[in-house]
Image (cartoon, rainbow, N blue to C red; front, side, top):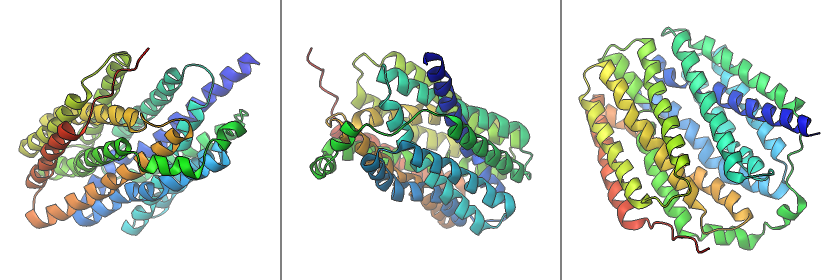
Length: 392
């Protein structure tokens, strides 16, 4: 029986890796591909932003549905099927409208990530270890996908990447069906969810502060690293397909290292307010530096700043968004947190594309986006309060 549980556990984390592999294998190359095809920066921003828009709309309803039904498998399986659809659409047609639908479907898939996290948190054993394994599978899937895409993409064969993504998601869905472990929430946990819990969660100030700060971080990252940095590298710096892939690989690799280091200090008191303010200043510095970069190699190296800032803000704000809440409120808080920061993922590329249309170049666009990092740093320093030490 223990052996069967180990097999089921390994299958689950393999499914998680395939989930994120399929989501990211084409991601770093989408904006440069669209730009080379003559799509305007404004439309590129809208297409990229659709990924965050559907997440923003669906994460709270999906987390509520998960809380009420306790059927994690329904939402996890649906997310894998949504990825298959997101990859098949542009594999069959390469019109801008199809790309828009594809990114919207990918956002639907990512919105189900709340159910994966809830499933893991309800397992047996140490919660931190279980979540660590989930994040490790997530990071491994993303890194392997970017590595694969970097060596396969040649500037025009993005359909190949979509086809591989669809196949990976389909295999993941098949393995998901083979995994016989039940994932429905116990009845006792279902009964703990109530209208009063919902209202208490909505009224929590720390949750909203963390959510809005994360929104600003995602806005800056998706306006730059997540969308137009690759276009800038291709159009202005003559970057090759390999170099465009390395832009994402470097930020992801530094993100993995940062998450590991933060995990090593998980039981120590960290100056979180100062770290958050520092990360937003680092994002502002990143925006200034990439605007003055005049070589693809320097631009690649600068992505380390994005990776460090991205992971640090994500870990600190996600860990503390529901720190004052209990029981089933935490799962709902995660749904609200992730839904709210979806606004930044949506508006970042859209606003950056609109700014580019006004100023006419990417360096000035990045400088204007960077100013938001300074404002966010001041807000984080003034408004965020470090957690109080727990009494023994």
